[in-house]
Length: 272
Image 1 (cartoon, rainbow, N blue to C red):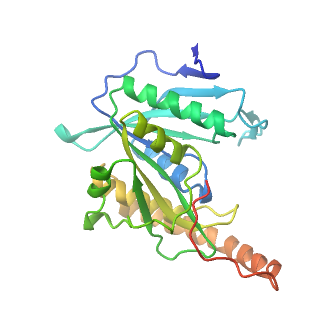
Image 2 (tube, rainbow, N blue to C red; image 1 turned 90 degrees about the vertical axis):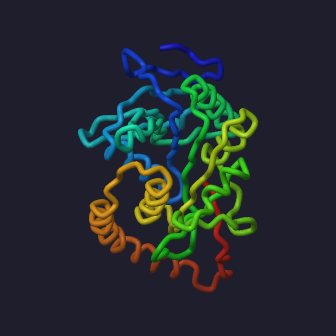
C-alpha cells in the first residue's frame, strides 16, 4: 500500500500485477439510475473479473453502508481486471466500479488524474465512461447517446450496427463527475475516450436496468466481449417487472405533488 500525492490511498489487492496488452478501460460509478454502475458490475460478474486495486480517501462521504450481514462497510472505489473474447482476439479490460463518486470538484479532478496515470502505466490508450440521461418518464426502449474527446473515435461509434445517437448538442446537458472529467482530462493526456449515456427515469429510487442493458449491447457490438445478451435479457425482464411496480407508485406520487406546479421541461439532462 502506498499514499498517492493527491490524498488518495491506493491498495494493490493482488500479489503480482498481470501483464496487460493495451487494455480497454470502462468506468461505471453511481449516477442517475445507477446505469453505468449496473453495466460495469454486470461485466465484472459475467467475465469473472479480479480486483487489482481499491481506493480510499478522507474526502469520501462521511457515511457507511450496512451490508447483508447487518455489519457496516466503508464506501469504496475499486479497479478490476478481466479478459473478454476468444483466442487471439482476447481483449484485456480494466473496470472501475464503486459505491460512490468523489464528493467535490477538487477530489474528482485529482482522482481522475490518478486513474489516468495508472492507465498509462498499463499502456491503456482508450477509455469508455458510462452514465444515465435523466427523463421525466420511464423510457420503453432507452436511447444511448455518445460523445467523445476525439473526432475519429466518435466517428467509429457512428456505425449503424451500434445504434447510438451522436447528435447530442443541445439535448444532453453537462456531464458531471468522473464520467465527464475522465474524458476531459484524458484529452489533455492524449488518452482517447467516449461516454455512453443511456436514457433512464430521473427518480432517485429508480434503477436504470434497461439503460444498463443498452450500454452493454453497444459494448458487445463494438468490442465482441462474448456477453450472453439473451440470457441477460431474461434476468433484466424479471428485474424490470419488480421495479416497475414500485416506479408506478413513485410516478403517481410525483404527479400528485406536481399538480398545479409549473410544467417540467422534457429536455434530457445528464447530471450525474
